[in-house]
Image (cartoon, rainbow, N blue to C red; front, side, top):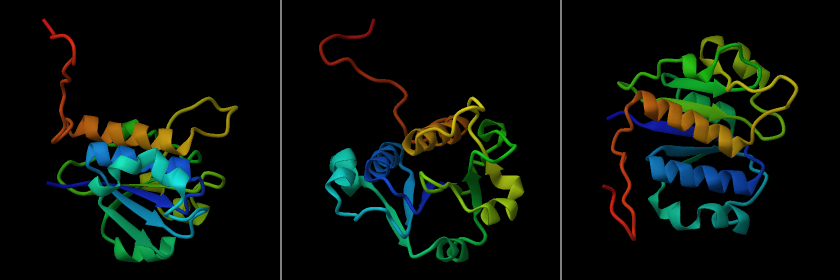
Length: 168
């Protein structure tokens, strides 16, 4: 079965990356991290946000955005940006192939050269025009769950159980 891949290009805030790693773990998404980082992978803030999930992750690291792009030339990559004209939920994420969702630095986003060279797969999450952007970890969660919703939440539990009571 195809996989969902989350790509973080040059993440700067360890808590965001930790939260995103937890999202990847609970959804089965693969995490790709592109250097340089604004922190050390061993950073306590990074681990605190996703500490008990690190062993449940599939993680890959790359030396640069170009390194990542060279290794994934034939993949379907969606570039999340505040600068796109296409809404992320208007895309049909094909369940028959691996899907890569790429997000840029918290302080700068993705390079515009990458966006202009990939206009058909540059997408945005709608927000009020007077504000800068959503938090990176929130954006990733929104995007991940839109893809999984379209895929009918594969291999995920759709029901929860109460601990002290039973549902009628």
